[in-house]
Image (cartoon, rainbow, N blue to C red; front, side):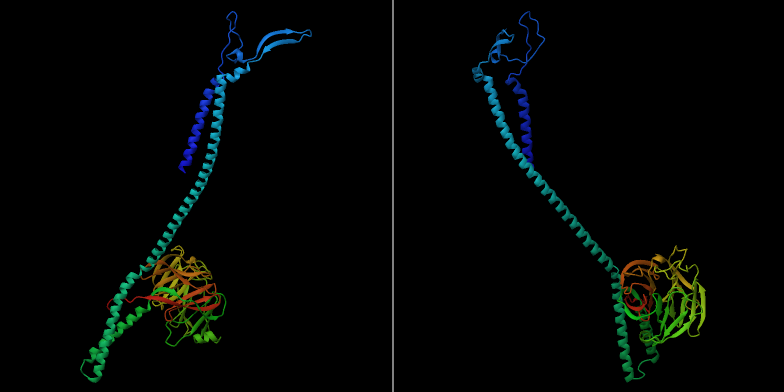
Length: 485
């Protein structure tokens, strides 16, 4: 790109020099120098001035003039000598100069043509260079973007793996604890085997105490193993299709072994009839049920059956009622102080879902919102017998923005919506009074979830999904604490 530009500069400079030289030289060569004529007689200057040739022989000359008989003017003139033009030195110089000018004109035309070609070449190269520069810039930006994306992906993966480091450390200790249990069981088994062969060789009381102690430690270990952090939710299993768009259904997590009765409540207000199915099989295959009439209609879909009683929010109030199915009567009722009700702080789908009662491995909970907490979720641990609040936690999550929520091992999990694509994205731990944002997909098969509760006995989520009763299995990340039991 530099050579063509230099050529253009040289041509322009040469043309400027030629123009300047011609403007200064041509007038003197062709006799255009002007002089003032003076009068021949008397020395008085003539008032008229003009451009005249220096030699009178080079111009037309008038020798005589007269009038003819008709009054016309007759003049005798002598034309300039023609031979003088051919022999005149200045004429030759002018001719030579004109030839030189013509030659230079031709040279300039040639240079102009070359310059035009070079200029076109330069313009073409400029376009190509700009295109290459744009491409290089795009490649550089794409490279930076790819590196940034890869960096973000790696960073996100590291953030996911980082919490596993302390967990893995705990697992190392847990593995040692389990090995100790195995060793003690092996020793006790050996001792019991020998005891059968040789009675009285060991103190029975001491052996009994060792067995009891190990049994308690194993029971405590299993209890801790039951709890964990939610890491996954399975695809839904449709149990039945019945009822309206809104409702709730559940089983009793504290029911005796073999008791699989199902409790079914259709609608979210102006209803007080609870259906009881003898088993999950009867619920799936028949409409044989027993109907229980509650003393008051319920509000929302946040009811829960726990240890033989149903806990529900009385319609258009912040009163919680405990109704005993065994006696068909109210065993306890209490106001949940400051709790919003009557669609003041409902879930995103509405439906008078201001107060949501739920259970987990730790007991009975109430999830609601208050004016004092600016409409954000409040979690309260309740005494299942007296309904008194044992302890409360205030969160920063707006109740109206939550689709649904449920408790697992003292942690409240909140969904981002109730229709369309749904996921569990917020978790508040009452054990540490901290929260985090998570991303656990929840398949919303029938597009409208109006009830979602966890059953610690089944380790499953019960959901009412647009007139369908469905179950979700959950995956919990278990951690066994290694402290001495």
